[in-house]
Image (cartoon, rainbow, N blue to C red):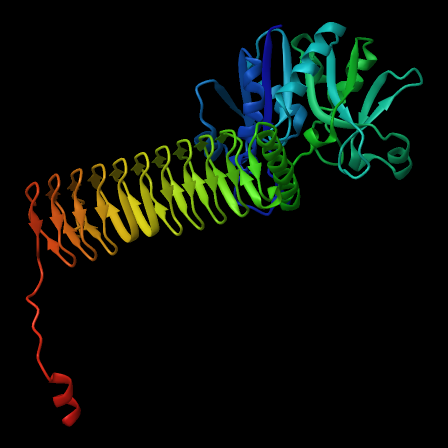
Amino acid sequence: MNLSVVILAAGLGKRMKSGIPKVLHETLGRPMLQHVIDAVTPLKPEKTVVVIGNGADEVRRRIGAAHITFVVQEKLLGTGNALATAGKELNKGAVLVLNGDGPLITTGTLKKLLTRHRRSGNALSFLSFTDDSMGGYGRVIRDGSGRVSAILEDKHATPSEKKKFTELNGGVYVIETSELGCLQRIRKNSDSGEYYLTDIVSIVSDSGKRLEAYNCSPEEIRGVNTREDLYQVTEIMRKRVIAKWMKRGVTFIDPRRTVVHTPVSIGRDTVIYPDTYIEGKTTIGRNCTIYPGVRICDSTLGEGVIIKDNTLIEESRIGKGSTVGPFAHLRPMSVVGRNAKIGNFVEIKKSTIGHGTKASHLTYLGDAVVGSNVNIGAGTITCNYDGRNKFKTVIESGVFIGSDSQLVAPVTIHKGAYVAAGATITKDVPPGSLAISRAKQQNLENWAKKRRGK
């Protein structure tokens, strides 16, 4: 079946009380519109058209992709006008129409809708659902034989009509392009001044052509108009994601207090404690343990990695068997090798840490290349910034750095060297050497007694 997709994303979203275009509000770290695009992409449409209006430039910047065609609805005259605006971009065949503020729709449901549409030879198909707790959705009107005849917008329905017609419009349509001419027959609503796409249902029905509404889960249809809606949709999505990973062998100590974004990948037998946030395109290997209070963003963890309490990891890679935390911070572009230990109150920025290296306490490593099996004592700092430029520190394999050392870059500590505690290193240290930089100690005998005498 030749398929085009149109996503309606031009609305103002007044009830969001926001300067951000509604479809760019995030659920699990991604714009709502992006979730809808992700749902339709596996369908492999010939064309995906996004109709934008409010905040058009900002939507383009956030969602820009080679396979997306944007068209602008210059005047926000309703969903019927929005689809008509996209009409010139569509190829012959079926057109799948969705709303950009409905991020819970799944690829599986869309595939079923398309299959039923094709097998039934319908001119128009759409999703419907039944849920008394959800308001604001149009009412599906059926005649005495059960055939769909119209959709009545919720705000125009009387209380008796709402009680009689309980089947609700899901707002997801499949329309043959041969029927798009019906859009020109839609009349502007006298109350709102808009052209309702829902009116196409009665026009197709009156023409005698085949159409049908197919029931689906109310959860997938839930849209976002308010901040409360946004919370509810995000919570449903969060539960979905965690349930998926539990089925694949991941343990969540308290799923209610854990957030996992949709692109995340987690290996089997990993254990995730409460109050953790696994965000972006993070990949976690098998048999890892993520303790409470951890946030991991766009990072990769190898097998058997342990992340201890209250640690932040951003755009970094951690090798197999390593331990990070508690209270550690890996800033972007940090790489930790296998079986390394990054301890409490250690900050790493744009640095590579070799296999088996330990930085256990109170250390800052910025713009550094650290070799394997290095011991970095507590309180060590790579002084990488002179106020204008950043410089690199190189610590080769087998080096021992004493506590409270300052390594003033650019500097290299060569293989097997030692740096004495309290040293300030401004020059390269040769292999196997001991570098000492400290004032000579003096002991003034009886000084305390003399002081008390005064």
